[in-house]
Image (tube, rainbow over all chains, first blue to last red; front, side, top):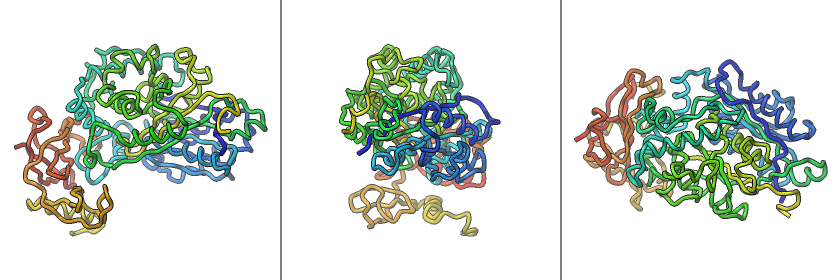
Length: 395
Length: 126
């Protein structure tokens, strides 16, 4: 079986670009990834692309071919994957599978989302369709509202306070300070977070990721291709898995846990032949501060009920034992929904390669994880990335 | 059932029943509760689903006060949405009460109200 390697990565600056089309955003990120990879563009055999709200934002379905065309690959098979906020994590899984099974040697994978042209109310409406329309949205559940229901359930079951969540926001803003692709490169204080207006109680503005326009892309190559073409690709995708759960929160036994992540993590670690303790750092899906808590518990870094205090104790910051969201996370780097899954893998790759502004915090690291969740974690992907020389993995 | 393009069979039948104080959920032989429309139990896949009365009193499992709504709820915010447990099944509904009057563990009843021309599941605190 071939091991997929990350030959190149590309991002747009995440932020407020309401005037930029999805096709332009994706072209910028994808062309940067192809340039970074140093592979001949014509060697790319397929595109897997993640996007969630294209029908709302741009009245545009069928985006696969549109995005391939935008990077000069209009005759390649191109597929759009939609799994809410896990859209490009799922796209990445398909690219990984194509390379592993030998069907392709070079695959372009990424995602893009245009959101700010919808305005806050429009983007809130578009995000809400990730929930169950009949049983949740009609009962007033918004996307922040759904995570607020999980946060209240967590506090009730395991304890914790809004201040604990504020420490997560402060940490992730701090991590984004030097990240030139981040939407927010500014520090905040616990007091600022606690005093900010509420979105859906107990979550306030600083518990929530922003509305973001942006794109991300990766060029994956097989081990064989990297050797034959002398491609510098020191980071390999060694584990890949996806988990699932009921769409509506009401149908889950425990609202304050995310078993889909637990299942995906077990499978991805098994795939890579590692344990949770082997993970040096992770990019996790912190669309809301409580989501980071749920993620680090389900990924096996903390016992259930213990993750809430991790940021307050400094265990997950840049100087902590296992840094979480060194990019700034969705919270501070931004969350262009369909672009997020592959942007996390871009960040993990840069951190492992040593060309990320926060690489010094993980200079001895060999293993990073990317956790990308859709809806209230009804869809989730977990990918394990390892820094290796060619030939060390999969042979 | 006036306009079939605006009627969700199963779901709207359930709302009719709740509105008549005859709400039901679907129960499989293993005791898993679910809501219609279903052909099989979402947990175990058992096709033997029996309509079972929803208990009169439910208990709030979690709730939120939504301050930033979707356009359908424009003007209604802040409002309370809760998940409440009625025996073997849980429902999500708007809570017709002041946010300060809602707490985890509070008893509620379930009904149906029309808001913004859409029927919605609503809880009343007891």
